[in-house]
Length: 276
Ligand code: IPD
Image (cartoon, rainbow, N blue to C red; front, side):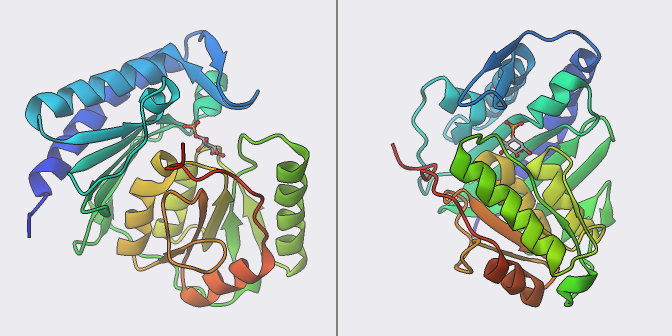
């Protein structure tokens, strides 16, 4: 079985280089364009960072394939094959980036035979590098990460996102999910504005669970393996096996907490990422 450590190390080095581009643009005025909704934004920096990452990887690994948020937005077909594939979100938290709200991340996952082999989430402003390789544990700036292990939902801090969907069904489902959790009760509900960094909070033990409906594979693929390697559980919101294309995810400190959240929340319909 291939060892992807060289690819992981290369991914970490280019994420750090690309973060300089993000940080130098962070305080500047940005030209913003809308994508699928008034809350789904893109800037020239998102597109530039994605190009920098893909061209560096392509130079070094010419046979590898890519799924990149901005390439897909520009019309490229999203197809996950058995080939080595890099799944890239150049700036996760673009709304934060536009507003200078200080949680923005470069998220890079790598799959082989459709299975995530490693994930890198670099929270640029915080200078926090989260990463994990299959079977090798999860790390934050070189220190091992462990989930809280919390089993009791009523003692949980739960992270989620309002998301970019703004239609009536999505909004009412999203808000009633939050109400149902608050009434359980949980200790608190939080949202940082970047799915990748939100989910990494579960890996640190700082949050006990995370769920989201409507995000895309590039938002959560890297952090999914980081949570799993920190000892956590990742599943679909309907309780079935995690499927990064389904646009639904629960990540939790224990199977008990993940199952409880799956019982409480509802999903609104959204097209799979790998459906045309
Ligand atoms: C978004 C962020 C946000 C989530 C949205 C995503 P982007 O990613 O992860 O937290 O709620 O669903 O689209 O567009 O900033 O890369």
